[in-house]
Length: 471
Image (cartoon, rainbow, N blue to C red):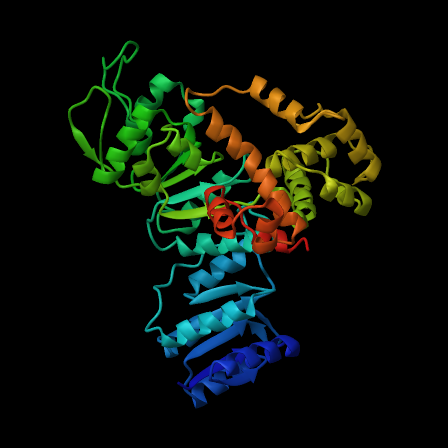
């Protein structure tokens, strides 16, 4: 089946590669490098798909797409851009792009998407333009591009989102981005950390309570669900929610109604749910700590945030961003020296983005010169308290395990699964790092079946593609 594509790309090498890929799938490809020529070709020919770069010689490829869509409402558009920020991804979504590909892209995936777009009928409804520059989601790595693309896919709907990631990776920032850029932006955004609420008060916090419902309930109190009516309710650390509260939460999500503690009236709720956890829920389900039916209810659209060690290319721009925000908050204005930036990239950052932010704020405060140099970074590293999760010099893995077990507490029947998850994940990540993300070779190195490895990658939320960049 012959199909026709218009490619708008001012980089000749990239245009040649894309053209060759499309022609292998029986596309006839017309090429141009600017907006004026694009409009001339569109008026003279019929196309099944339009592929366009953003920054072109004679203007912004996205800004002019609304005019294209008014004239050719059924033409699917694929946007390709080296301006790979969340703002660009959201602008592509606002322009009703069929798909958005940040550079560098996977050619096979791009061609496959072009085939799907050419066979598609109509496009998605456009959102009103929004600016994403105020959202502190920083990163141009492939791992963060995947996050941006997932965010744009959930903006036009109310699907429940489960954000997965280690502590400090920015889960609440992603939840705020989904709210601020989505259809519920005019409603409230209510965040609740279920791990920070006393166990006996979780249900009251979520659903509210009536006067006299329990000792100390001197007046009716509205819970988080009612506070979030018409907006978004963000349930952080949902893996730490008590079992009885899990049951009531599941009932509320299934029925769309809640009942205050001590109350009889059922109240209809209109909220979008975004949940987050830094825990591996699979072993918790196996141990009976987390309800499997609740997991499937909240895990409609999972978004996995990569730890900082898997996107080291983002460390320097993040550090510079935090220096700017520190200055805006009243700390001295500082710049970051090249050698200092290199030292930051080599740090493990077990606390992820949150740890890096705190470190840069300290650097802004204590640096003696306007430019933060390598000596300042070394001094701050040496003066930091020792990470008690790090193994002591000369200590064996057994020593580390014994120390970790001594510092940890577990519910009955969960020790095996939790300990296994904690030590299995870095083991698999090490194998992937050693093999450049090659799953077959990693399985051989580990001495396990490839299908077993694939299952564990899913269960432990490990993205093998993140390790391919290291090879």
